[in-house]
Image (cartoon, rainbow, N blue to C red; front, top):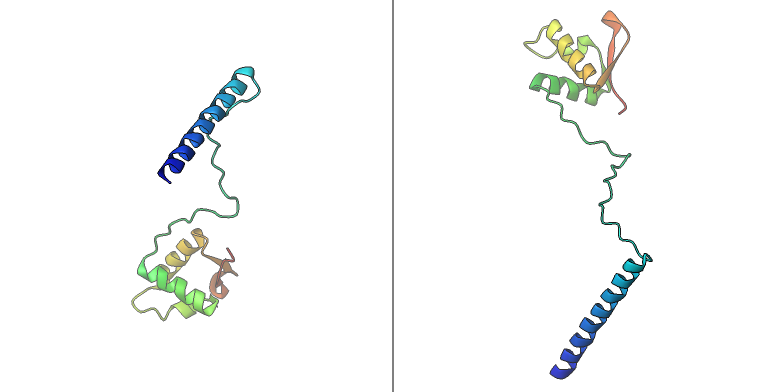
Amino acid sequence: MKILKTLIKILLFAGAVYGGFKLVRKMNNGQLQLDLAPEPKKESPKFKPARRIDLNDRQQSIFDLIKKQKNVDIRDLNNIKGVTTRTLRRDLNKLIAEKLIRKEGKTKSARYILTSE
């Protein structure tokens, strides 16, 4: 049994050597060319890398409220205690700039809605 295993190993080695010689001969004759340059990495067009958006707690709570209610106006957000209307507008403008929400309408009748991205 041990002799058989050794014989198989020798035959495999001889086959590999013979195959290697055939490859070298083909390369020297110009019948075979190896391209050793790595292929360029292809990025998947379907998936964009995730971007990190830093929101403070107040902005996150505003975003969560809009996500929950689907759309809100400035009066709905006045429930947040200790926050002025001016601060709410600044936070909403940051969410709009980050393209998390969009504004529909003008002035007092404006509604804030999640973007569809």
